[in-house]
Length: 318
Image (cartoon, rainbow, N blue to C red; front, side):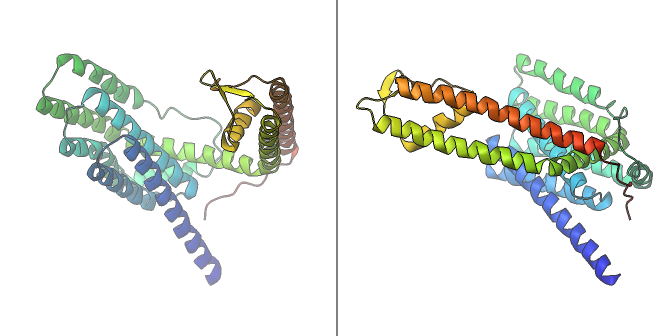
């Protein structure tokens, strides 16, 4: 019993660490891609890590719950950076960091104040299977209305200080909606996590056909890339055009062309002009379509077998 309890604690600790690392990587990726300086990136990571740490410890629900909350934080960070860049470009870093932190901290404060109520409802909902999402979205129209209203601000040609005030006021209104609907937000996170957990379980069952598909896919990419190179090596003139000019493909370019041909994307940046390579490309497209049919067939077969299998007994939390 003692070993079992210790194993559960270790699993919970590892789950928490993985979810936290996922949060930091995801939010860090968004922050760096947004083009902010390192101080703003560090502040964004600290805000989201603090929010995740408090929330996950207060309402521990496993790795899927943590990853769902991490994803919500990343979506929030993306939305904030988008609206700041579009409607408040002159706002300095200080007010922007306060505006970024405001909804997160207000949400955590509302969860702390209503902890017992939220926790009781949360544990009750985890004991049943989610078949449909209830109406936990009533706070989204208000937040969306605030965001839509900010698009009128650039037409006003506000000074930097006025943009900072407008940004803080907008995020304060958003924080009010979040605080009012904190319970609904937590329940939405929980329901999405349960759905994600079910999808992850089904993905585990589909790993066999997915692995077979990816193995065949990679094999075909390599084989046809080599055939393209051999076709060019056997010819005296280039067999492809790039930027409307004759060009001998490198092996890396042959791999790239093989991938986009097998996936039937065809960007048009590399064009086969030789008869042999055109024949090879046509054959690769046909093989790629057959491979897609095989993949869909195997996935459908596994899904039918899963539906035909007897349902497993519900698993209640400890």
